[in-house]
Length: 96
Image 1: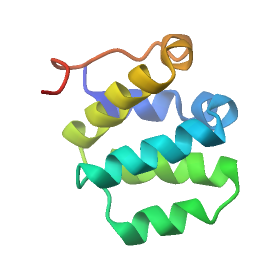
Image 2: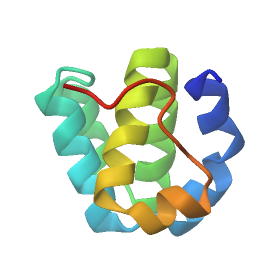
Image 3: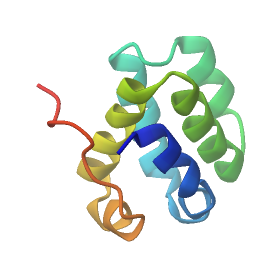
Image 4: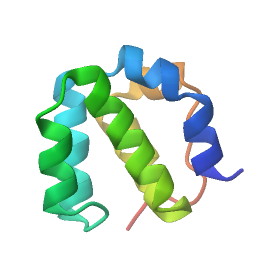
């Protein structure tokens, strides 16, 4: 199963349910691994939580399957309950 279409299918629930703290941790992780750049992170951080969540999903989806898998893996680690609620699972092996 490709992860970026999967992210689109859970976008609304993700926006509604993800915490601000988890979003900030996701942004930090995505920046650290080079999936997003500082400009993308800074742009997302100044927005309200719902808009920040939309940015995270949309920017990562537009970067393809590998980036989407990274987001899913990070979410599973940071908020296993939300990940399970959204029925997100690893599309590939966990990252190294």
